[in-house]
Each structure stands twice: as structure tokens, then as C-alpha cells.
Length: 92
Length: 241
Image 1 (cartoon, rainbow over the protein chains, first blue to last red):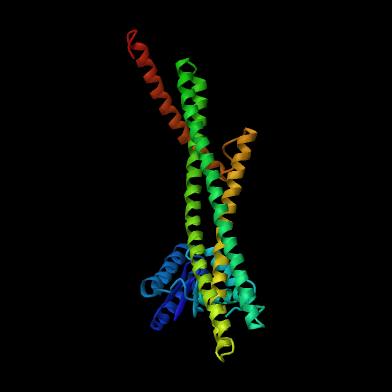
Image 2 (image 1 turned 45 degrees about the vertical axis):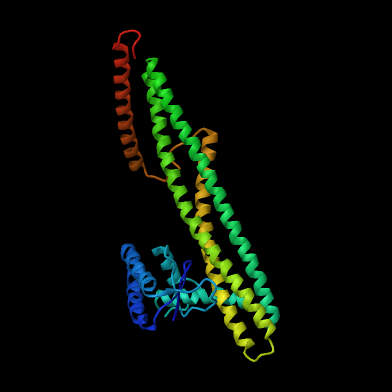
């Protein structure tokens, strides 16, 4: 699958990593709720590194749509909170 | 819904706006390409602006550095003249200038980081736009073929996502540069009106008082060192130094 890290670029990641990604994703929901900045940054890096270390970069001259989009590496907890409460995004 | 789903939704929302005009395929490709060129120009402009903001900050830092040397010389001069009060004032100002310089240096390296990121984004976009142009011409040439429509779709969504992402990169870089520029503008204004130092740092009373105390200690230390070197000079016989 194609994974994009916002403002960084796209990676090809074996589909088998989706479970691990979802696992970290769920933990992120919790720390954002608890407004735990340290925990948030730690999990964010964990999530991004999962893609960076196990994926291969999509070529500069390739045009492909992503299956999954990860937040930008310098996103703050506050910005993440805004993302969760932001307009136009249906709460799940 | 987790952060993955939310960022993906956000991305798709940004993309859809770019794909709005996708009606006549051939025309759409050209319109999309024009948009890409325009965006590439914007990103390049963003990099140029960032470089000039950085240069401005570097100039400011240079001025502050000069100021530090000047104040240092003034303090020595004042002490030579036996004016401890004036020397103290100069050293106090020097301490403020040093803090200011550290602040500026920090801003400059922050800006360098942003510049690096945006330059990378520019290179990426440049490559993607080139790839799109090639693909566009191929698709146009084979337009009668049944799969052309599908190919247009995938090329467009790929580039649209890229453009959406670059938009985000540029927005973030601009926000950060704007914040730095506002701060450096404030320093300029204060320098001009002669009320330089303090209160622009947003610190509370206590931390400011603490800063002052430690700055005082620095001043006292330097003052003592100066005193020592002056009295040493005086105690030497004539003709030596």
C-alpha cells in the first residue's frame, strides 16, 4: 500500500503493517484525549518510523494516490486536537 | 475514528477542490498542469521570501553583535575613567544584547530548518510536475484509447494529492516565517524607538526578575574582573603594561 507522511513524501509499505499502524493509531486517540504531549510525540514518532523504516520511498517522478495519510512530523498536540474537533470531519 | 482516518479525510478534502474542474479530460489535463506550474512558482517564491527573512535576521544579529562589542569597549573606557556607574550601565546593556543575540540565533536556525524543508518540497514538486507533463502528453496522444480516462484519473489524483501536500507544507512554512518576521519586526521597532529589551519576550514577572538577578551576577563578576585588571595596570611601574 502507498502511505503518505504529510509534508514529507510517500512510501510503499507492505500491507501487513496495517495492524501495527492501527494499533498505534488507537493509542494516539487516547493520548490526544488525555492531552498528554509527551506521549503524543512518542507515539507519533513510533508511527512515522514504522513507515520510514519498513517502507521504501516512492520515486520522485511517480504519480500515485495514497491509501493512508499520516500527519506531518511537526504536528503539535494542539493541532492534533484541532484535527479531531475540526470542521467537516465526521466524528466516528 | 483515529488520526490516520482524519488526516486522510483532510487530504481528500484538499484534493477534491483541485479536482473540481475535471470534466473535459483533455482540457482538465492542461488546466491541472497550469495550476501545477503556478504552484511551483509560489513555492519558489516562498523559498526566496524565507531566504530574505533569514538574511534580515542575520543582519540584525550582526548589528547586535557590533553593539555588544561597542558596549564592552564602553564599559572598559568608563572603568578606566573611574566611572563605575557608567561601566555598570554598559555591562547591563551588554547582558541584554547577549540575550537578544541568542534569541536571534535561535530564530535563524529555526528558519534554516524551514527553508530546508521547503526546498525539498520544491524539488519534489518539480519532479512530479515534470512526470505529470510527460504523462499528460502520452495520454493526450492516446486519448482515443479506451483506458485514457482511467489513466487521466490516476495521474490527476496522484498529482492532486501531491499538490495538496505541498500546499500544506507551504502553509506551515509561511506560518512559521510570519511568526519569526513579526518578532524581528518588533525588535526593529523597539530598537528604533529606543525602548529596546524586555517585555517583548512574554516572560512573567518572576522569571524576568530571575533573569535580572543572574544578569546582575554576571555584571558584578565582570565588574570585579575589570576592577582587578585596572588596579593591576595602575600598580605596574610607568612604561610597562
